[in-house]
Length: 231
Image 1 (spheres, rainbow, N blue to C red):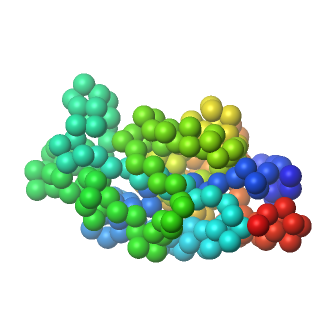
Image 2 (cartoon, helix red, strand yellow):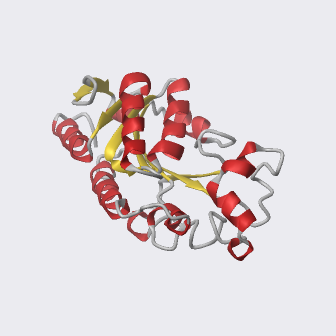
């Protein structure tokens, strides 16, 4: 157990029981002409988020730290969306856009489409865990909890888009399930103004977990490996 220089206070991490969670780093959220871009959100910060996550994965993989990809996606007929009786049907951005703009039907966050695909720079490797989800939280209606427990994972480092929606939703559920959540502040981006990102950072630091930067994560991984506690 090594102490991570986190905020609001250092926290002990067992790197043998840790994983990096990459939330929804798909064309839908991080690429021009993807869903967020088409909806009018500012995605100019996405390339920096991609670079931060890539640097973390480059440090995590050689150290044997598992990588978990969460990927939101629906069947083309939206039969797994909950339907009109579900609030998800009325609030989830992709579903709302497809229902209101017929030309987008089956093109946004739809399994098998370009919009659904993870960005080229962060493609999963063999052995990475990929979990497709149909709700904001990666734990809702998926096998994520079972998969993590089977691997003995307790500490989760969260990255992805959007900080204030799917990242925070999954992080909160992780906390409720007794995982230790750590948000990478420069490895995530909000849907909306920067204040939305900062609000999640404050929520995490005050109530749900801890925060660090990508550089702090990478330095800690290197220190752990030098101490002989990792691959």
